[in-house]
Length: 288
Image (cartoon, rainbow, N blue to C red; front, side, top):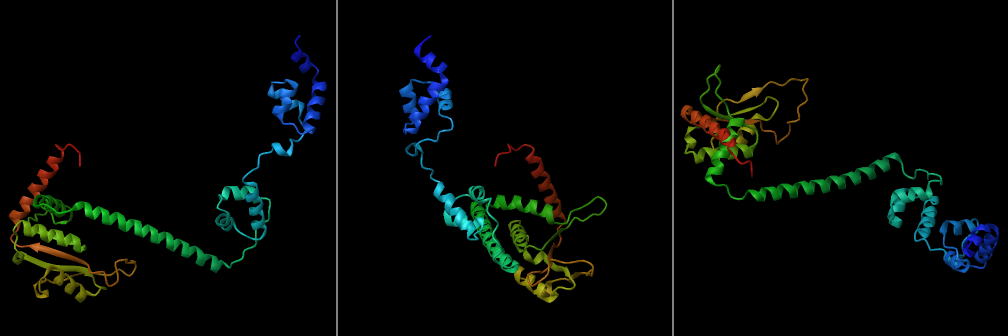
């Protein structure tokens, strides 16, 4: 049996030596070298219960933060306030101060609600700024429209929003209805591209009877550059008192209906163009 083995066998004698060395201020590494014990499990067992010397303890960076957090919590600060003060995470703060009593409410519910609203308003403002930047960047991507791009877009626009012929109700005439001035603008530009003169246009407004009908008629007349006298009779939608309408206020101007006179041939061509578009989609590579 080797010398080291006999030392391990005489555990109690080794333990006395290890404890004595520990109390003299030696580190585990120094005790290991002094007693020639190279098994860490045995070494830890020999000095179990003996605190390490102060000089071997590593300073903990968060000890000061922990004590400061407890002081602030005892002084009545919330987790949010402590986080701002110390710059550490709420999870750490919660762990450090969870045994301390929760501070009494220092604000009324109304004051707390006002602060929350203010914070939410700031959040909404940031979201609106992001939304605006995204829209502006997307608008810049369009650039200048070619005649072909406008032509194809106009066909799709009409097929989405225009009057269409049905087997049970023949309507081979061009009529377009929309409340969005941008849609109206694109549709008029498309008709101009096709060579459909403005003298062939007729207009009328569709709007709720409770709205400012006269102002709406004047707005659409100015928008399309036509005299109000050229407008047909406005279609009024009866108001249902049980219905809560959101389309109210000065910005509500109803819908503008644009009719193109003598347009049966144009309608047939539109229907043919649309057939050609969706047929071509079957042959597309699918790449934008």
